[in-house]
Each structure stands twice: as C-alpha cells, then as structure tokens.
View 1 (cartoon, rainbow, N blue to C red):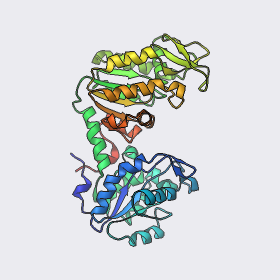
View 2: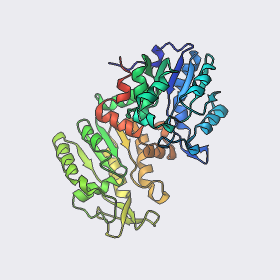
View 3: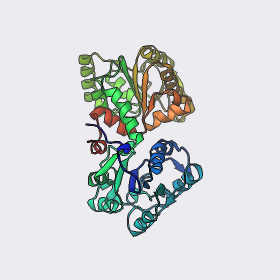
View 4: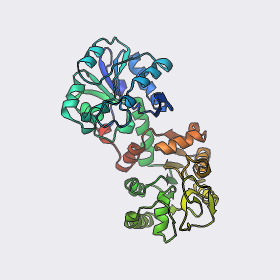
Length: 390
C-alpha cells in the first residue's frame, strides 16, 4: 500500500481542507522561528496553483479547549500575509461564520482558520466536531506530519470521513526519509539518542536494536544507563524505575550484536546555572549533576561514528541551551554534518541544535516531528498516515 499524493487529487474549485502544522514559537505575538510555515509552502503553492479554494487549519500551543488570545492564529495570518502570500483569516474554525468566509473564496485563494484546539473536540476526535469540519470540506490533505501520531479530529476523524484525500509534499518527504532508516538502511547504522528520559524513547530503542549497529547515549538519559552500570551519578536526573528495562536493552543489544556507547567523562555543576566542573571519568560526585558530555566522550563518539553510513539523531547531548553546556551537542552536530552518510535529525531540541550550529543544510533530512518521527520508526507508520493509503 502507498500513500495517495495531493498530485492525484482534483483540487480545481474544490474546498480543500489542508491540515498544516503552524505550531510556531511565539513570544509577545512575534514569530521567533517560521520553519514550520516554510516547510508547508510547497504544498500550499501547489494547491493554490491548481485552483483550490484552500482552507488552512492548524493548532497552536495548548489552549486546552478554551479560546485564549495568546494562542490565536491572527498573528500567524498577519505574518504570512506580509512575508509569503495573501490569505484571509476567520476568527473561528467551525460554524456559520466559517462557512460564510469559505463560500467567499475564489479559485486559488486561501483562508486560515482559528486555532483548532480552541475546541475540546479536536484532541478528543469528537464526532460532532468532525462533522462540523466536514460540512465545508470537499477534499482533505494532511501535511502536518508532527501531529500525525495523534488521532485528533483534524488529522484522523476528518480524514476518515472525506472520500477524496491524500498527503502533502512534507508528509511524503518525511515518509521517504524515515523509510530509509527502517527498510534496508545502509550499514553501519548508528542511532544517537539524548534528551531527558529513557522512558520517552524506550519503544524506539527496542525497535532500533533490530536495525542498528551502534547506539550512542547522551543527555540526562545517559545517567540512568550509568547508574545501571554501577557508576555514581550524584544529583543527575535519573529514572530508577527504568533500570530493569535497561537490563532488557543490554540483553537484546548483546543478542543483536549492537554496541552501546556511554559517556566516559562529564561537565557537571551544582546547579543548571552553575559554573562547569570537568570530571575525567564516569563517576559524578554526590553534590554535582551531569550537564554535558566531556571532551573524552566527544572524541570517543567521533571515532566510533566516522565509518557509519546511516545516522539517526534525536535528543541533545547536554543542556545545550546554556552556553557552558552546549559543546557536546554542537560538536556532535558538526561531526555528523561532515560525514559521508545519510543523516536524519528529529526532535525539537536536536533540530534547534543543528540550526544553531549552522549545519542544517548539511543534514540529509531534518524531521519536523519529534514524537511522530520516533513513533514512525518504532511502528513503521502512523495512524493518520495509514488512512491516506490506497
């Protein structure tokens, strides 16, 4: 089975509901990063060029089913109008005012609906909310990969209800890239996983052990692995309840001949804002917390990565938002970008890191969906993508 493409749909003069991901970072009503808007532009431009009456819909933040001014998409609409293309804005996403605004659309014109999550029915996939969306939808297109692991109304329920449906170019790009990781990836294949919690990534770790040759652990989750191996971790963030699971990971890794790499030194401190203290071995003193991988670890990881042909990176190596604890993450980002390998970076923090390191253009694929990309790798598909297949 394959995903039906937007190119296979007749969009001319059709009320086309395009689910995008405009969940952009806003500060004081100002967009700080418009990457998600840019990623959606090829699909939007195609639909407008084909004469669609284009209905753009997205969520923004977590308003929890309430209409909150700070989560309004009005500022996003204004930004798009100034920088990219003309579109109207309607201050609701269902109801008579929305229907009237959509009725006024001409061929090749676009409108942006208000935040879908202003209604509890969006996240609950409520049939009444789905029906309200379907009343003005003739063609459905999903291009919001980052939310396609959630069975919400606009990405799941509506797609089930509309006969003429398909995927936008961003979803096609994501699926093609991630399939290279899970269907006969070129060897050696390395996964670099960081971030705060082992529990957040246990499913993908277990799945990856069937495919990878090397697993590199960084970030706070490394301290739970080190604790399992008998090292002192001081005040570092750990998940004691995950120790039996890590035992299973090591047993499966041994069975699959996968080598696991852990930090051999650290940058630590008494607090997140404290001055870094270099620790030259695995142990962390009782009054300290690990906040970044050390120089020896960076060099060890580089040596082990230099021959790989496929790389997945999800999660930073340390608290890279703090300059004094950013070196591990930025060094790994730069090294990955220099390799002759197919590289995929996913997860908000990792994506931010490759952009800040100035190497984003040297990464083979930057995924727009952190949790979605991990779930796709773990399960081989996502519910909201499956329903777009023939």
